[in-house]
Length: 521
Image (cartoon, rainbow, N blue to C red):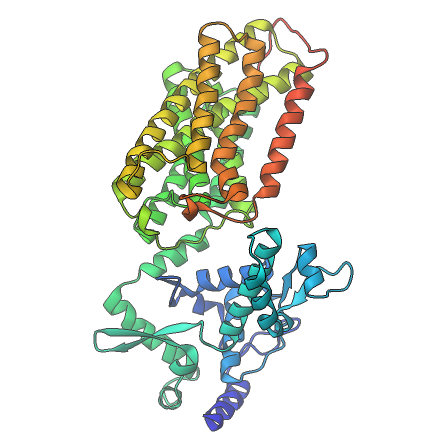
């Protein structure tokens, strides 16, 4: 094996073309074209491009290293298992102050070389086992432990597995066992790039037998449909503001819907399930659902203001999908058992997420009215006009929220043997429903005047954010553990602070009154 490894290294250095970067000069056969090959990890087959970017980002917070792509970085790290050297020095962030103290980092230093972190594996394991309470320090240490273990697995060559075909059987084996000496010698007689030939020949056999579903995901991720959707949404908002003719806005809105629909359909084809099983997917689906609902209601009522609401909220969700990547992960993972019943998945969860989208429309318009009234001026007639539209979206959202809670009770009985158990997710959904029912009742009976109604609607959405994000990011307890995530506590706290401050600012002091005013068009 040592003889082969030495010959392999010499051959690669001398005969295989390599890319030039500022730091890593020899990339051996690690080229971006490898991103399209299949790899089996996380319970499913996916393209190496997706897997490599996910792992490098988990390790460093970025999906590339200097001038190397994620695929090249992952490939070079994996080849260390074949004793092929490189000078890649990955660093991990250490933001928690207690974790910094544990690792004895110098004051002000918030990063550590992952190679050094690997040496701390035994002490990290002992420290994590000692922690009885799962607090922020424990989570930070557990993340560092996972990063160190993953880096060691990658650099040993055990993480990168390739399909080895034996008749109709597929064996997934590590790259260190896949690149056997006899295969390389035989391929060398037929190709100037024998290593790529060995890999591509096996991949071709695999695709002939198992299909090319991984290539669909590869092209899907490379197309960056969330970015395209965000640009189209912003163009639609610009057209709504700048042009008197509604045609341009409507055209961009329709293109946005089609792009997001393609995003959802392709994600369904890849995962084989409805795209509403993690935080990224619920944010994506709520934005799409809200825009679709706003276009339908706007068409029926012949009002542009609904399109404004839908586009604004859709822009918010798409910005989260594209920029809040530390909080929302676009990874596609196998479903936990409780989510595998597609009927309940497509009724309870879809209804709940659609209700969030509908209530978000009322939140968008309520905040816009508060801003307009405080800083630009708004007539009483216009305030009542927009209040009626807020009331319409509020009714739609509250009805769907109530229906979603009832369907959730049926699902709970089906999955856990009880209709209601005061689980945090159930409790906060009920709290949000009661708050919105109280507002609707107060508006219907004129107990809540228009001025107070708009401010209450803006504030009420904080209960939805608590039920949606707070239970997952802050409480992180209960039977809905399949949805728990990391990294959103700061976002949610900031949202509550900004929303509360904005309501206080816009509802106190003098407000401008005009005879006429417009928000849209």
